Image 1 (cartoon, one colour):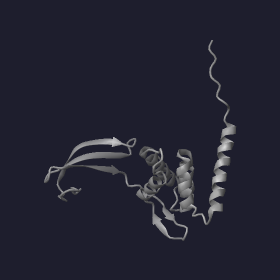
Image 2 (cartoon, rainbow, N blue to C red):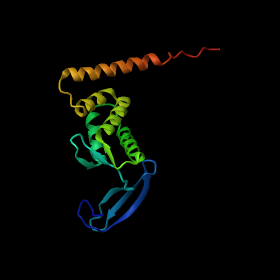
Image 3 (cartoon, one colour):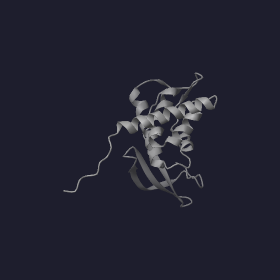
Image 4 (cartoon, rainbow, N blue to C red):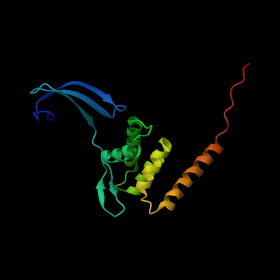
Length: 167
């Protein structure tokens, strides 16, 4: 591990801690040459299926690319970094659990949209507008109409909350 400041390869680990429910080890390191400290993260290298894009290209799953897309959709919205991390981790678990060699990007995109719809509806619409690449405003309005209908169905399905009676 090279120091990010002086590029010297010699450093020592000062502290190690588990994070993300034990799936990642966080290490504080100190460069032996410049004495500056930096943090590294260690995670098990997972074997993910290849992602089959709409045009037929295949590429490796890229967690940072997915996280950046989620961040962009959730920009200036009340969604925490922890919620975005949890979403990416959920999708990673889903991919590994499938046991497939290749997975269409459309199935991943649909899963991301379901999670975003639960987290923040504005972020969901932002992501959907890019992901589904609407050709015109009528397609966009159709998606919004479906979202509003889903909300109405959920509202009607929930029983009203009644306050407890004082005894």
